[in-house]
Image (tube, rainbow, N blue to C red; front, side, top):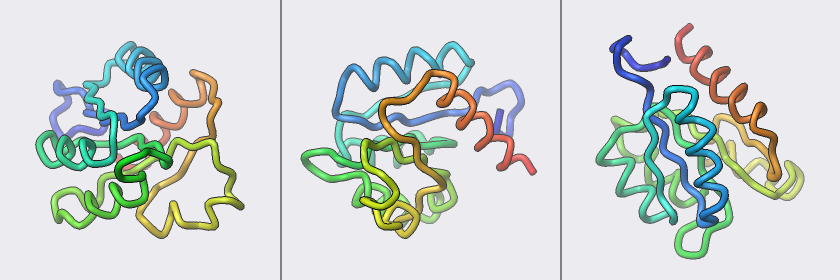
Amino acid sequence: MASGNPKKPATILVVDDEEVIVDLLLNILQREGYQMHCARSGRQAVEIAMKVSPDLIIMDILMPDLDGYGATELIKQNSSLKDVPVIFLTGRSAEEDGGKAFATGATTFIRKPFKNQQIKDLVNLTFMSLAT
């Protein structure tokens, strides 16, 4: 895992206002051995990220209080979090996003609906690229 301490599992923050999506991601990734935290809003994501310093953030874009773009911008303003990879989770296409995900600091994004294996592969690939 990506964590500096080989005994400590990498920490992932999952952010989505849809409870079913959060529960699904927690279920998939906890089985992979990751330490998980979740937030149900963009504002809550910023607060939790500041407290737990996750190794990776999986962030929904469309949320009611503060969208994923705004939350990511706020998180990336913190010098200790600026290099944390963010995977946007969205129902939007690349054309609809218009590159805004990458402009706000996303590493990549995955479209909803997704397959469990897609999430596992993308998370593992993200951590592998951080280790090199």
